[in-house]
Length: 247
Image (tube, rainbow, N blue to C red; front, side, top):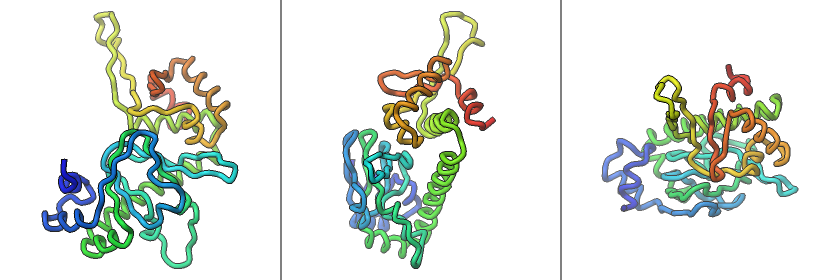
């Protein structure tokens, strides 16, 4: 599968001519990562912009004590790396954006640009710049909502919110039909596509692993969630919404 074909199928570049895609092809590099591989650490991302083509990536920050905090999980066609310059001008300082690290949650393909080369593309194609700003805006909206949740909601509610987020963005529905022939008894569960440890879920919620495990076990005992080979299964999404205060 050629890099040119991959670029043509990235939403951010849709509607561009083959000639324009060819230019982007010359300025970009496709990179492949295995599950758990490091894509970049801290400020090493500052000279590059990435677009996720395939797989899932976690964006993290680390405290001075080495505690990891998962800022977000990305899905295909999202932009990451050095994008702060496209939002903030002048003397504004957002040091946390330059301290992010990125790791592959699954086998992953990314399209990588040098920052200067990506700037050239935006100057030639303003429509791409508008799409970039939209993607970045959606990400900051999510991060803002998450920060508010961390400040004001209980751990039960925060973990429920995280599970809802995973279900909505990375869930695959599975229809279960019991042995009974009564079709009305069938139910739907949602399987999260990738594996997440209790530690990673705690890093998504800003809580300790021990407290997170207690809440997850409680949700499992109530029949709201389950685990299968480290993958999360959402058995009652409406109940999670109720706990999260979203109903």
